[in-house]
Length: 378
Ligand SMILES: Cc1cc2nc3c(=O)[nH]c(=O)nc-3n(C[C@H](O)[C@H](O)[C@H](O)COP(=O)(O)OP(=O)(O)OC[C@H]3O[C@@H](n4cnc5c(N)ncnc54)[C@H](O)[C@@H]3O)c2cc1C
Image (cartoon, rainbow, N blue to C red; front, side, top):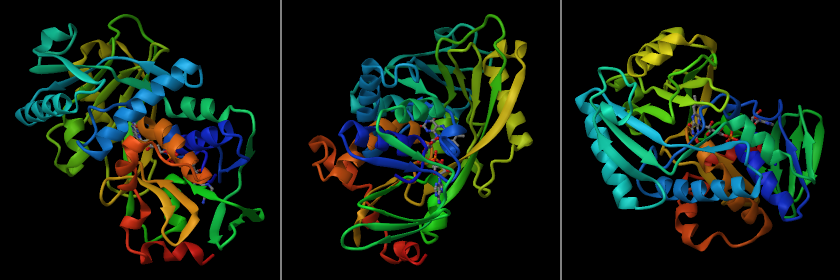
């Protein structure tokens, strides 16, 4: 298992549950990548209709199951969400959201649609709110730690993977510490996959986040999300009408507030101009935030593929190599399901029948063979 982010952790967890021998290798340690610097919406509402929305629905249900079993009990928190509009473009996005959830007709529903009175405490500029039921929040690093905390998972970090060489009987990994021979390898290295496969159509997409102090009163009963966040999922983030702010109340009494989408390189440097725009909008729509102090600001970097879908499945010319990368802003949400299904791929078991077509849409085979060639060089 290469990568100790939430995807690698979920896959290792399911492999260990099946009794397989699994070693997780990470260049740094658990949650060193996007999983440690992200928001954690386990959300169907924010997904594009089709494959992503269906996989997110299945993952939400499975995440709830893992929480009920105790595995994710402390990581996953069910909560409602309100999407708000202050502008025409955002109202259109809310219309599309309501229509999408009606068409899916799953566990996530738009249960109320109206004015600011739906959520007392919102600011004067809020024209419309849509309340969503059935979703939840899961902090990436908490989920990663919980999933890795399973007997039988061997840990190897810090140790960087430099090359992957498959052959008919297994795979030779070139690591910073030397060579390692394994039967099957799962590549869950997030954005780091680009250093192994430089031809991959994937690019970094940064996002700014900040955390407030605990404060008193004015606490939101669920997430409050700008409808521009929905627009940012499918359109050029630079053309957004307003910052795509998401205000997420944490169980600690703090708020986690994010998160922009910036296509300006692999930088987890805090961008204060973007941060201030997010803070301003957050305080305008939820004025009680004016009583809070920002105690931490950070940025995470998503791994965004050219077609917006993650890359999951056996490599076409090397079936002992399984890819599980490119989750952009959806990896926390999809982690439970993808971990379970990638473990099945590694064990040679059949996928969940109802999801087979959606999972095969994520196959690495959708990219031209030259995309993958560089990795075998090392
Ligand atoms: C600002 C922001 C907000 C987000 N909000 C949400 C959200 O609300 N909901 C949601 O579902 N998702 C969200 N995401 C996306 C989510 O965080 C990611 O999709 C997810 O964490 C990806 O997990 P991963 O395991 O694929 O990758 P990562 O967490 O990046 O893990 C990859 C791991 O691989 C290791 N690695 C890399 N290269 C090598 C190598 N060569 N050798 C060994 N190890 C290596 C790294 O050290 C790292 O630990 C957000 C992301 C960001 C940045």
